Every structure is written in C-alpha cells, then in structure tokens.
Image: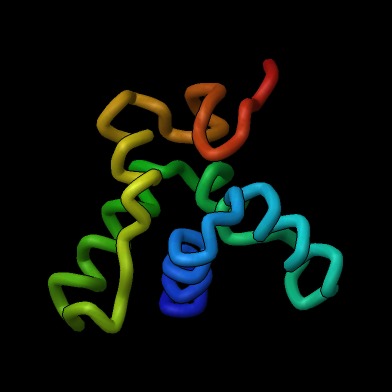
Length: 90
C-alpha cells in the first residue's frame, strides 16, 4: 500500500491523469497494472478504508488520494459500480 500511496501522491503533484500514470507504469513493465486501475478492481471503498487505516496507524507516511475519496463519496467504487478512476462497461 505504501508504494501505491506514493504513486497516488506523485500523480496528484504532477497534474497527470491517473490513466497517464497507470499507462507509464505498464509501459515500464514495473507492474502488470497501475495502482489506480488496481484500486478500481479491488474497490475504491475498500482501498480507501485500507488507506485510512494506514494513515491512522502511521501518519502522513501514507497518503489518501483526494480523488479516490471524492469518487467513494459519490458512490463510485470502481469496477463493481461501473465507474471509478476508469469507466467499466458491463
């Protein structure tokens, strides 16, 4: 989770879209998929819950992506609801 949190923070600071960041990670072959797509697959509500627990336990060494919080607040949990950082067709 800390590696994903650092990528979430870097994306926010860079101004690149989550999709651009995921694409660069995939192209580098560092990981099979980027952390934004992975969070969509596992459920943004679940990812947010884990991230919040990490922040509560370890402070600002961990990061909660504000876009993820906004998506969850709007009921968009990723693949299971059809929308998250990505649009997921049925």
